[in-house]
Image (tube, rainbow, N blue to C red):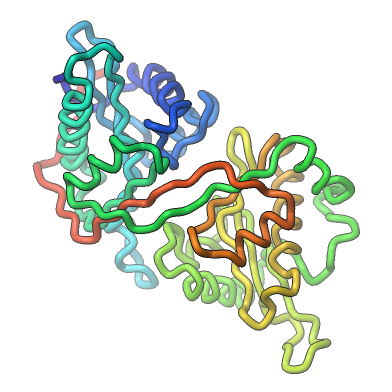
Length: 342
């Protein structure tokens, strides 16, 4: 088996290259990561407090990097979300096994187990009670790893993407100067500073997505990662309050794509085009704020036919299927570890 140790700054570049290479193969793909070196570098740079503090690696006898596991875990609880600190996401495990190795499967699993054991003792994992893994449906190594650690398959989701000319066509004439979006429905706007509107969006989000990685409170907070757009009532329909939040969409730019994270519409206004209106405006805002990207993406839970119809109506196409594995009674073992000197 490879030797497993905490990561050092000197490991980062090799880790990025290893992850990007393995991500190209569905049998190793982890859904928390992108497909390119640039995307992986951006994702690892976004881990807090920094990648070195939340990563462990495996090396062979020559010192060559052969495996990596990074974790994303929140350690800050609040009155609004006291359980927030107890959830961790595994960015991996990735293990590079030579194709001609006589016991490739056993080496992969033994290394993956050792990576998880060491990651469990990182200070960032203190107090974690829920563990999430997320990989390609064809990643049987991850499925076997999850089953061995009693992490159950929780949901299957499908990735839909809109690329190239189709994405540009959707945005043509939408993005204007100085942040305005010409010809857009004036009921759809970027999340305003009004606390009442933000509270409404937060309530809707927690109602529609009670187990989402990002709570409603965090979604609407100043400085949040997400860009949020909202659809507000005009008061023209019976029972509709002018200015009421009827729906919202949230997403963020990544190195190579715009990611539509969530779309929520009041049930009364579904199937009327509200979701498509929100997604168009969101993509326009992301394009104006972040510049050109060649792809937009959204992950939809299997069986959510309404969302699939909405995105396909906008031109999105099914790209791949992903499986989320979850353990809700996780208890990391071991004492905190210290990082070695670079």
